[in-house]
Length: 80
Image (cartoon, rainbow, N blue to C red; front, side):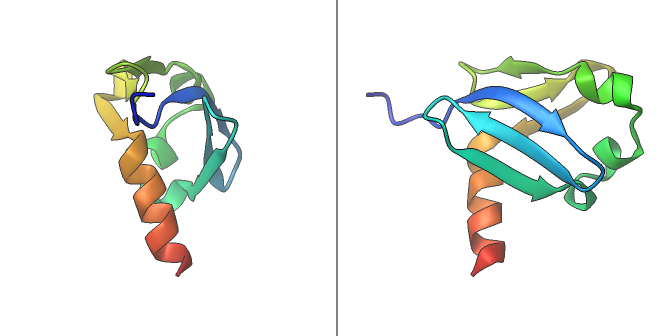
């Protein structure tokens, strides 16, 4: 096992960014944490791709990148 936290799917709603991990867990973080994504259109949000061996998410049109492990760490630290 590589130990990498890898994404499988990305979903959105009005409040949260949801990332389904390859191990079945789902990370949900507030869209308010990501101002460029909050301002983006639905079409722009849907135009993502998983990068770096599926450990990151890129929105090329928005020139925006997220590290999935950082999302997990942020969601855990804000839940405490």
